[in-house]
Length: 119
Image: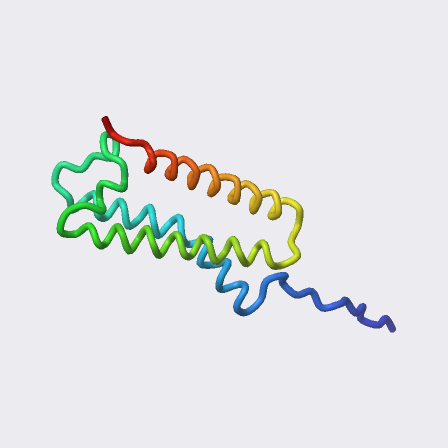
C-alpha cells in the first residue's frame, strides 16, 4: 500500500491587508480610464484626440475628475508603498524604482514650470 505524499503548504506572498492595498493599485488604472471615458461621453465638444484628460477637471462637473485624480493617485501610491515595504522579487523592485524615478521627473518638471514666469 502506498502512502500519500505530503507537500508543504504554499501561501500567497501578499495576504490580508497587503493584498487589498495591491488590489487598489491594480484597479487604479481601469478606474481612471473608465472615469475619463464616461465623462468624455457626457461632455459636449470634448475629444480625446485634441484635449488632455485634465481638461475634464474644469467646469461645473470638474470635481468628478479631480476626485478621480486624487483617488487613483492614492490607490497607486499606497500599492507602491506596499511593494517597497515588503520583500519582493527583483522585477517588482525595478518597477518601484522606475515609478520613483518617474515621480521625481514629473515633480521636478512641474516645479520648474511653475517657477517660470510667463512673459
